Amino acid sequence: MRPYPRPRRAERPRARVRGSGPGSSQASRPPSRQRSPLEPVYARSVGPRVTDNPAELRYELTVDGELAGEIRYRRVPGGLALVHTEVDPKRKGLGSVLVRGALDDLRARGLRVVPVCPFVRAYIKRHSEYEDLLMQDDAPPE
Image (cartoon, rainbow, N blue to C red; front, side):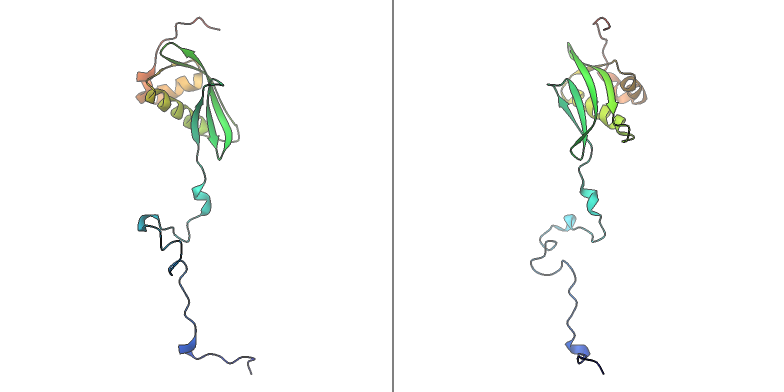
């Protein structure tokens, strides 16, 4: 014998579908923003971001708020000479992201580039869409 009476089928409480009732957060979202219950939470992490830090004369690559790489530069008339690229060795493939972000920023600002760094030079050679940014450096080598 059971310690509690089994409810009849008609008396069983109905299972409520998660996120479908009034006051649920998904009910207030527009249809294009509704999240699948299987969508992983980590997919909303902050991706790589390239910013110019003129006080340090460098472009910085940050991933999830941490500095992951940099391109050192010096100012030349009409543009920047990209001198050295360095990326955390544990983070593979971010060097190209860093160079692309720096070149896109230079193009948006109407500046030209002198690719002193071999990595930047090779990147521009592989991506011909950035060749219009190239200029000659008239400064003597350091």
